[in-house]
Image 1 (cartoon, rainbow, N blue to C red):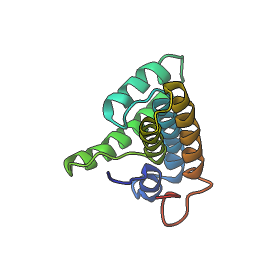
Image 2: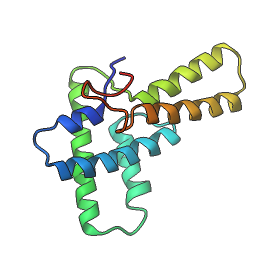
Image 3: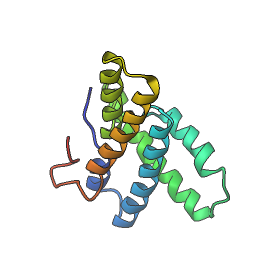
Length: 142
């Protein structure tokens, strides 16, 4: 499985202004948290569902919707690069969640226990890969 960090790629993007990068990071972090809480994949259908359920479900200002739509377009183009290469990117929190689920199942842990452990692993991985923990080399732990 390919280790990727959209945050590193976003930060390194030469076609975006610092303000755009900051705004895109806000929206894409929100999306990542939202989809992980629902156990969704890192893919375009999840982004579309996020847009419908989380973004447009409340009244937003036009500038917000425009800026957030641009962020999701950047993200779906980023995903398309991996798809063309036949790769499926996964985030650090997602890899943590999958590892805990797999180990818990092998050990015969109850579903509720695995769910609790998965949540903690996702929170820790999100913290470990957060902006405060990202180094010049890329995502922490990658």
